[in-house]
Length: 381
Image (tube, rainbow, N blue to C red; front, side, top):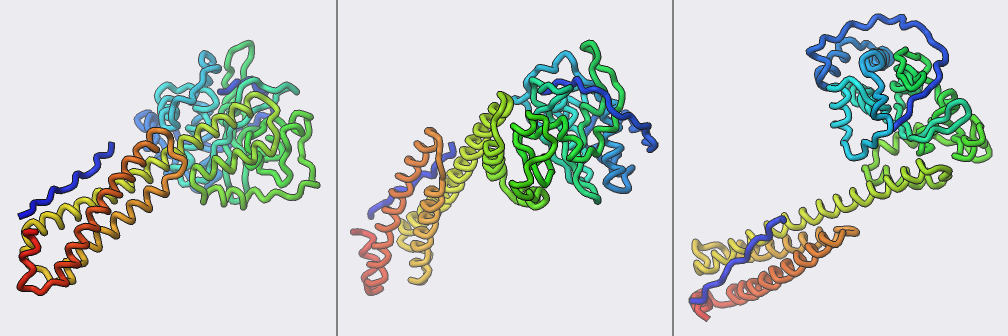
């Protein structure tokens, strides 16, 4: 009797804080002291704030006040690049060390606000002080309230620098700042986050203007943010890249931001390709398991007995699954060199498995076409 071998499955392989203090108003809201036991965990801290908040503005307020009074600006690391750290790591460091640069202030605020169910986003960009552009990028937050969109800059709101020394003094100007006021000093890389009906170009900001040319038309940032929320991460990055380039690249910070976005796009594109490739591998393995089961069933001379329709369905289902794996593999877009090589290997394996399926299909066709008394002889040929 002819013994058929089975197939093998495929094994898967920041920021310079030298803000001049502007208007200073007393904090009229009493904020309950956060127990120390709850202040070192994002989950516990957010849970406490949720219990204290009665409305979005109050919640933003208690978060802003806690950060600006408990997190110190880290003068020793003001020129350190933190691109290698994840947002979770940055937030964890801010809570554990009680210090940081603008990135730590903004990411911590954003993380707490989002856990409290608020609509908050971090905004990267650059700043202007006393008519001069800062040399390092900055990070702040855009938040939504019942009355509209505002900005919160917890780093600049925590104090200012005098003689290379950080002076803690809460500045309420940077709490729920109107977009038309913050644009005087803060320029987002992506004009979407100016939150203005007439966004400024980079050149207009450098020229000291505070309002974009109305002739360019009205920009509906609310609809654009709604679209942003619906987009995938790579779609957000691509849209942001287009907007930044269209708005003008006037300094090294903006150029580096674009390069960073391009690297992120490449990363997500490759990640998406690998995920799609792994999906194809998973489907292929399912097909191979079915093919192996059929081969074993054929080696047993179709025992226990099944109807002709059931046997035909077994072999046809294998073809359907292998075809799906092939389609999934073709959907891998712009793979890197390593993934492309793996795709070629998997494509060959799918082709070989499909060829085997077709040979078995031919046998089933012949088996069904043969009179039942003579079918058993087919297994010995």
